Length: 496
Ligand SMILES: Cc1cc2nc3c(=O)[nH]c(=O)nc-3n(C[C@H](O)[C@H](O)[C@H](O)COP(=O)(O)OP(=O)(O)OC[C@H]3O[C@@H](n4cnc5c(N)ncnc54)[C@H](O)[C@@H]3O)c2cc1C
Image 1 (cartoon, helix red, strand yellow):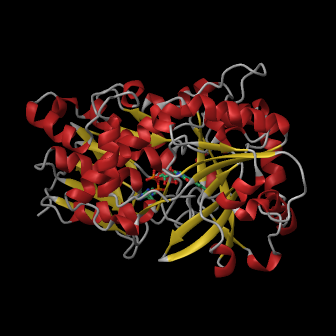
Image 2 (image 1 turned 90 degrees about the vertical axis):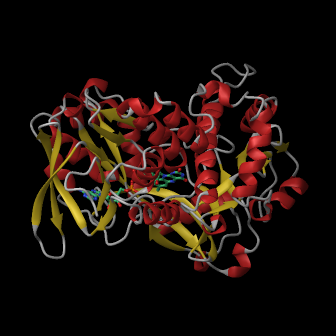
């Protein structure tokens, strides 16, 4: 029976709440936890398989984590790639624990081994890719990354990239240890487990419309979307893991961190191919150089995906304009109604400060099918128009902070109330891949007492063996190799 005042309320049933809820309940089985999700099923917004690329971001193929050095020939800085690897490794640790303990069974239905490739054309990009591979492969974690500038090798790795391509320099790296993850499916597994635990419930079709201070915690207003009935409820701790719906709720809290905070949504679209003859010929996730104006939005990539039991190819995402903050349950009034006297200046300043990005977004949004197909043919020259259709992807809602004075930051950030009674997640990149690390950050900041006891430490160690290891050290820890092989076994990941 759920407690009248739950210890924890998680707003949103996406991958972030799913990780935090499961982690907290395993850390302290006495906790009463309630989840409120506006949609009729968890994991159907940004975390849904179709709404994101499913890349287990580990710094293996994404060139934006290793920017080219300012002077040609200087060593490539791989610090960011190592950090992402270490954070993703924590997700893998948590997931193998979740499989082993029945929180997320049948891993083959939500995670697969898929090679990650980086692909470039031209002499200078090829030289950079060579230097990047040399810098990464010197590290034990990226030891198996291969480089080629030979068409015959690339033809074996990814024939669609080569066939029909005019002569000219090209290069690629490949690492078999990449993954494709269905974060929506994983969210539903973890929340399915959580909802079945004593004192816990997952309510779908319930939208949280208000979050305000109350004695020793927070008062929320929750609307049951079918009946239209609203009811107040209290809790001691709130996590706003509402994806695109987070900023309006955070603004409602009145916390200093939310003052002047604005939100700007960027929609997404994919080209999808389900012609079995084409799909069967590509097995990998291929990332190229991000377009120069795109900031951390990055460029499109060619991905094999396993969705609804079917193998498909996705190319994108392409950015689009939207005024909605949520793909499924959002409204076109989301953007206008999020603007107030305190954050209008933040929005305008950001637009003025980033003309290049604004122009890039405008160009993307005005694209026609033919220009999207032209972008696809940069990767897959023989792509046929009739094999590809356009579908919507998820919406990224960019947080714009007053204090950033117009500068844009694309990472993920956990913000908390000074007394630790509320946490919220801003940002979308590297996103779902680092959800275990995000849940850990919330626990460390808002539930530190649980990590002071020997029992709490042992429980956390079982879920995340590296929870108390500095991120920079995870990558060098001697035990890494053995542990990683064990994780692969639990997750049923065999090298592709
Ligand atoms: C195009 C695209 C590609 C991406 N590719 C990748 C990738 O390859 N790898 C990767 O790791 N990440 C990727 N991401 C990022 C990743 O999808 C997100 O970081 C992640 O899914 C966010 O999870 P979440 O739980 O915070 O949000 P969501 O999954 O959006 O969940 C939030 C939930 O809150 C609910 N909600 C909202 N408001 C309310 C409310 N008021 N009351 C109740 N419920 C509410 C929503 O219905 C939703 O279910 C991508 C994102 C996009 C848009």
